[in-house]
Each structure stands twice: as C-alpha cells, then as structure tokens.
Amino acid sequence: MVWGFVTCGPNEALVVSGCCHASGKPILIPGGRAFVWPCFQQLQRISLNTITLKVESPAVYTSEGVPISVTGIAQVKVQGQNKEMLLAACEQFLGKAEEEIKHVAMETLEGHQRAIMGTMTVEEIYRDRIKFSKQVFKVASADLVNMGILVVSYTLKDVSDTNGYLMALGMGRTAEVKRDARIGEAEAKSDAQIKEAMAEEERMASRLKNDILIAKAQRDFEVKKAEYDKEVNAKKAEAEMAFELQAAKIQQEVEEEEMQIKVVERTQQILVQEQEIIRKEKELDATVRRPAEAEKYRLEKLAEAHREKTVLEAKAQAEALRLKGEAEAFAIEAKAKAEADQMSRKAMAFKEYNEAAMIDMLMKNLPKMAHEIAAPMCETKKITMVTANGETGAAKLTGEVLEIMTKMPELVKSLTGVDVSKSMRGIK
Image 1 (tube, rainbow, N blue to C red):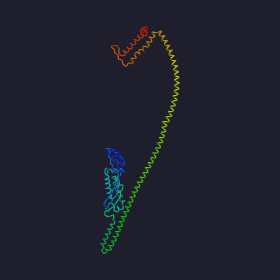
Image 2 (cartoon, rainbow, N blue to C red; image 1 turned 180 degrees about the vertical axis):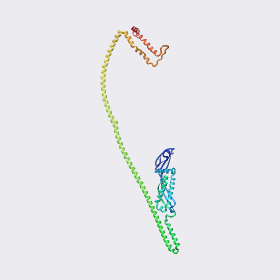
Image 3 (cartoon, one colour; image 1 turned 60 degrees about the vertical axis):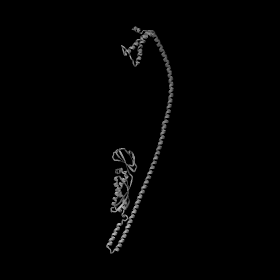
Image 4 (cartoon, helix red, strand yellow; image 1 turned 90 degrees about the vertical axis):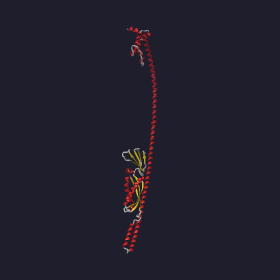
C-alpha cells in the first residue's frame, strides 16, 4: 500500500480518492505531489502523454456514391490542465491501459472521418484537404472533449481509390461521347462514314480533353501537395525556431536572475561585514575599554579612600588610646578610692555592729541563697520522688528547699560563732 508523499512527472496525473477531503470528489494533481493517507485513500495514476493515431477509412462512399479510401493522422491526449476534462477522463479511463484510450479515440475519429466523407464529393475531399481536416477536427473534438480527451491536431494524409476514379475524372464524359457516337451510328447508317469520322473526331477531342483534365487534376494535386508540404515544413520550422528562441530567452533570464542573486548576496555580505566590524568595535569598547577605565577609576578611588581611611583610623586609634588610658587611669584611681572607703566603712560597721550587721546581711541574702539552692531543680528535666506517707509533688520539693534554708543558721554559727536564732529572738 502506497502512503505518504507521492510525486509524478509532468506527463501524468495523480488521482487520490477516498475520505479525508470535504468535496467528496477525488483529488487531481497533474505533474506534482500529494500526501496519501493509508487505509483511507487510494492512489491511481493516469497518463497525459500525446497519442499518435493513424485513422484509416477504406472504401467509404462519398456523397456521389464513389468509394474512396482516406488516411488521416491525429494527435490526441488526456487534458490535464482542465479539471473538468481531467475528471471526465478519470471517470472514463482510470485504471485502463493507454492502448484502451487509444482504441476509443481511434474508433471515435474513424467514425467522424467516415461521416464527413459521406457528406463531401471526391473532388472536394481531394482538392480541399484543409476544409476536410477542419470539419473532422471540429466534429471529433466536440465528441472527445466529453471524455476528457483533447484533439491536438488532425491532418489528412492520403486519398486513394481502387477504381481509378481519381486518375480518370473524365471517364464519365468519355462514356457520354461513346454513347452519342453509337446513337449517331444507329440513326444514320447511310452517313456512317461521315458520322463515324465526326464521332471519332469528337471522341478524340473528348479523349484529349479528358487527358488534359486528368493531367490538370494531377498537376493540381501535385501543386496542392507541394503547397501543403511547404506549409507543414514551414510550420515545423517556425515551431522549432520558436522553441529554440524561447529556450534561449529563458536561459538568458535565468543567467540574469543568477547574476542579480550574486550581486544581492555580495551586497548583503558587505553589509554584514560592515555591521560585524561596528559590532566588534562596540563590543571591544563595552567589554574592554570602558570596563578598564571604570576599573581604573574605581581602583584610584579605592586607593584614595583606603589611604584617607588609614590616616583617619590611625588618628582615631591614637586619640582613642589616649582617652582610654586617661579613662582607665581615672577609673582605677576612683575605684581604688571607693573600695578603700568602702572597706573602711565596712570595718567600722562590723566593729560597731558586728552581730547585727551579720544578721542583716544574712537576711538580705536569704532570697539569693534560696534561689541558688532551687536553681539546680529548675534545670532538671525529670524528677522521680519515692515517698511513704506525707507531702508529695511540688509541696514536697518546697519543703526540701525550706529544710535546707533552716539549716543555714547552724552553718553561720559554726563558721562565725554568731547564733542567728538567739539574736533574732533577742531582737524581738
């Protein structure tokens, strides 16, 4: 099965039938290409070649009842430029061999040729071949065009007869003279010799006349034939000269177009090269020159700023060091004075209020001590407590902290000899 893109030459046409096109008619492509869908469309080809036919009509009676034989040469072909004629030809001959097309055209031309012969005399056919050819061409073309076949040309090639009519067109007159001679001889036997002599004279004259007519007819035939041959040769020469001239013109136009294309291509190449030069200059300017200048300017500014920054930082550091030294010296001096004064005051206070001062310090620092005792518990993620009877949970933890706090007076007493509990009761 053929499918995909299919091409054909100028001497044939593609016929694509089936679905996938809206008109419902087959697609006709003379000398081109088409895309064929597999399983949905069918591809066929029809020949557009010119067919030469030798149309022979032997022993056909003319309008006067004289049988003659005529041979004509016709050139026919399937018309590919006219869509309607090509469609008609496809309907008639698609799928048939070229011999079948040739047979149909031959039968049609031969029938019309015989019909035209029956309407004309031998003299008309023999002496006016162009008229006969035009009539056959006209009638056959009108009939074959309905089949999609174009009659390119038709020419009467030969006219002949088997009875010698063409060679003796004056035989009828001779027969009349003989008949008159016999009648005269019967009517006037007495004057037979005179009548016979007169009849013989007339017969000879008629014979000479007939011979002259035959010779004249032969001469006219040869002249017409020579004129026809001359016209045919002239037409052939004109056609050959026209073909050569047209080919030369086309070749010249092709060479001129090629030259124009080369000129345009060269011009475009020059423009492209100029644009490329401009582009490269701009690219060099954008990628090398300007960045280099900008980098140079940036480095100069950075160097200048770095230099100024270094100078200012050095000055600031020197000033800061000086101020820091002065501040540290003043702070150390003030701190020493404050610590000395504080120590002297504490010594005096402890001296005068030894026990009371310690109690006061202990009472002030109890919350801090409780906070430090409870701090490890705050960091504990999980506590497991085992108890028998009594408080549990948060109350138990609070009791543990308070129990530690109640032992603080004993610790103070063991370290300082001051009984905090007793002093507190004395204060009351």
